[in-house]
Image (tube, rainbow over all chains, first blue to last red; front, side, top):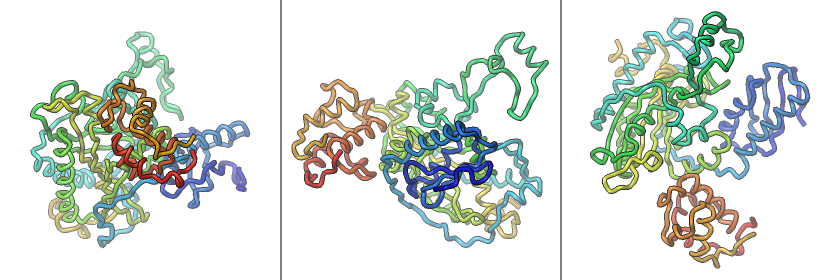
Length: 401
Length: 89
């Protein structure tokens, strides 16, 4: 039996169910959302002990409440879970790499990144230029499909996300937007008294208006909504857009690996099933050539979205069964792991049905997207090649110098 | 309760689907497939899978989730399953 309070701020729990290896990462990530008192969570390699680091001591009632919540996460995600099928489509993880350090250390030292708050970073010239370089490749990919360029807002209406069941699937990652109520007294009070303390703005919640919009978690939703409730013009469409995306990751927010505010470039396909699936596959083959040119060490493997605990078991199994999602996982030599820098996604006719996007024959359109995380792509490249251009692959060096 | 998979008729499968998907029985045609009805979406499909596991002891895994996407496919799978190897619900 573990000593429940080995140190003042550490709490060990025996999970009600042993957590299988293939679920450790997912369960551990969700523990970040259990309680604000948790500053860290770790599951032992056998999946039979959970260690919580707490940012304050807990009395007995608090400990019992924490344990109940943790067990609820474990039970929801582990009980009756289906082992997910892992299919590897490409494996170039063993490309020789010259660098094995965490590039964040040097980026921070040089002032090339500046942290504004957890998960929010400003990027300097090196990363900006590197991101522009990768964007060039992604724009070429989009152009190869004749993808029409779009520009989408950063806000997304709450009712949009409700319509596609986002609240149920990913509530933990949402970022809400509001403003002061149109009330002279409330606005004046804010102007006179607003200040920040350790919890953030000290403004009473009643000063804010109801939430009508959120910060957009993805780019492609805006395209689907622009096509909603009408026949798809021409019966098929390729489009592309880049945008700021927001996914709150609690204590999991880490350097450029996991940002709250990040940028995604997407190439989006809407049309018949064959159109979407074939183009997704063609995109993957084209990007294989690009990654070879760039010298990226990576693997493309099946994956699942980070559904919340109540939805995870079923939705992850469904995604896995139908191979709906493949991630481009770039190697991070400094921590002997990989980082998802992009993904190839197929949504079947989910958006077509829910948003009434119809094909000429009246059936719902299928959709899919190829998405790239720009900050992660640049970070992974630097993690593999370092900040010295002399060590970069020729194609990258010559493009940037 | 563990049903005998080999004695399950198409009608029984239709009944199960109507109940699981909460759809009027007359909308469950013998050749119904995943996506034919709004209720048989990804979540509906997983509910059907879990019900099959519960009622008939069919092993549900990523292979069967992808295969059992229509009433004919479900009927064929049940017809092949050896009742002596069925797991208890």
